[in-house]
Image (spheres, rainbow, N blue to C red):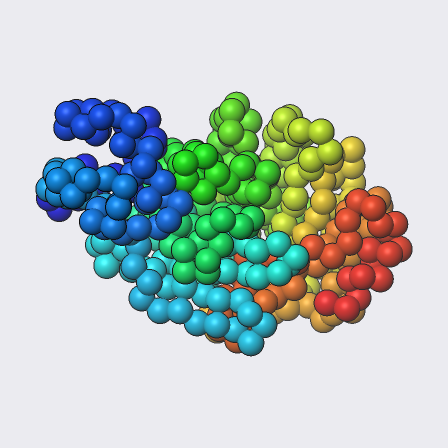
Length: 360
Ligand code: SAH
């Protein structure tokens, strides 16, 4: 960045092939380099041991390789781990590793801060500082995979860290393509979930992508008045239009859209809300993930009592909606937001699901 040299962390494989050809280097070396960077998480050219020493020197002088640096690492008593990354311009972002849910899950950020300003979210209070680059988004995954020795294992990625992925559309989609590349981590779309407040035009654009992640939409309300109050930046969009855009979203066989719903005491957790939600989502291949608020100083809302969470969930379940309650993990290290445990599923009856939820 500073040197004006091309940063290979920002390149998809085809772009990297192009860049090495421009240097007069044979194209096939790009695959080797891509493997070192994206699969092995290497940070320097000199470790690329299947390239000749001369070639490594040449690459080092002509190109750069930027990797987010781990500035701090905190482990929760429940195994959740929060990573603080320092970027090249000294800005910091957070990523979270959530083990055994039963999958291994990485929760990554797409922006420094966020412009959406959801009233219950700490990141929203920061405002947007800047977008992350594709290399910074994919970089969180490759460093986590390396540090946790999961490079050759299966893991999921959820874009539920800091930021609104559809507000940083190009970089997010490029990062997903970089991660999907077989020479890299070969992360298939099935194992990625993009969480968004869901602006309809961006959803329509996403729907046309050849490389489609699972979709999670942050709904949080059943009336326009409440949603607009909670998410000021959603004011131009009616809830009915958002749900209509979701109905048009192409779903593969047996897939469904997840609707996230942060439960705020006395604001959106009433029985009437639950019934309206059933009506709103009727006929949609949907599941609802209830997230009892993670309270924090400066957030002017409170978490409903478990009894209300349970009541809300039971109404959804009896309305034939698949429902889960997100269990907040890592709360002791303030890593709770965006952590997911799915209890219940399509194979369970609503009664069983409700029973499973009581324990959270
Ligand atoms: N911008 C994306 C990703 C944000 S974080 C989105 O809005 O979907 C992922 C989820 O955590 C969102 O559903 C978000 O609303 C939720 N969330 C934010 N703050 C929270 C809090 N304090 N407690 C519980 N969930 C929260």
